[in-house]
Length: 80
Image (cartoon, rainbow, N blue to C red):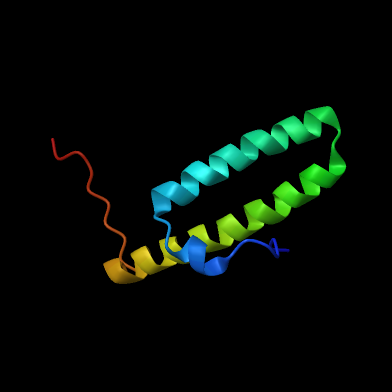
């Protein structure tokens, strides 16, 4: 479940790096909320993380689609 108060258009304007930094910060805050037993805060943070993860995945999918990797797998071994 995504957080209802996080504006998706604001998230779409963030870069992959900004999304990753925010996800890292939210994860740290979640760890604190778990350690302190603050369940309401933990629930809010989980929803925020879900929102950021969804946008991060969407941006990564766009990057991979632009690269058009297809189903090709190239393995170049050591040619000694």
